[in-house]
Length: 379
Image 1 (cartoon, helix red, strand yellow):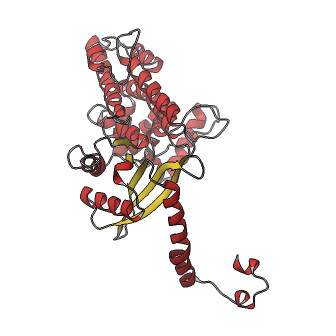
Image 2: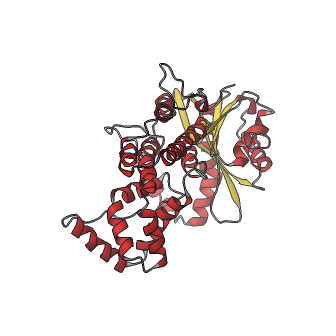
Image 3: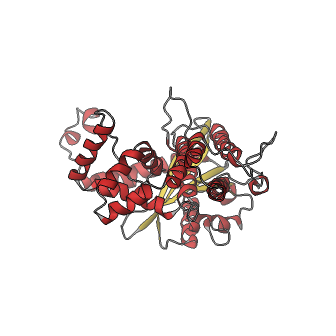
């Protein structure tokens, strides 16, 4: 850039800029300039911080800080990177210390901090010794905003433990593993699928990954749409022990009923959580870059209302944020067309039907209870 601007200068024309000089310019010239501008722009107004720890394998851990404030220059709410602060220890005390040092460095008053946004790690959100709890001793009105994407993922994965049978989790993971490293098995299944479906190719079985938001929905949906074909494939391959176990799961219609119940709920959670916010697309998202907080709150309450309505006795006015779901559980809830249809086809005895419906109700109530934690509690 300097060579283009200073074309008449012999000194600039012969100057070379490599890593060392570039680093010194950034550290000693550009960084102080932009830091001073940011300090002036924030002023003495209120602000909030977004916090997250680094998750790489390096020895030195860092705390990323992003500040949300009213910009005096732009005359609007602005989000800006603040600092990547090194952590001496990855505890609540270490994070609070790094945060306060950063505020002192930028000349910001800790009392002006309105809230913090974090993931759902216990070190951040712990009631007694978390970062938020420690900061509240100095700032009683500090609001905690938990990451909605983390919360929805945890509501499905961790809080459903003990409700979703373990054999279904085994089925979802092992169905992917069965095909993932064997081109022969994929070819055999493709031929079988084409025979059953008049030459159409099957959709690829995807992996339910814990680090990707609600990827379990895609995995469950693919399995549900190919249930009959997969059952037939594993029946043919049942000489293998894993295939025999999978065939036993696929031939049990109770598992199909549970998957039919889960899929619409996972689809709704996925729609709220992972759809990209692009102008012109209908729907809503918590991962859009220019999201409207009021609309996101409405979307979250709509999701809660959708889940609550599935399992409680119909009522004229229901506040999904405050209603005690356990007190109004419907003894005969409508749990979706796919689930109800499969129950009728199976001709189960009454005891089995009641047990299956109870399991579905408990899972839905658990997800509702977890999702409520995503909404900040204003003091």
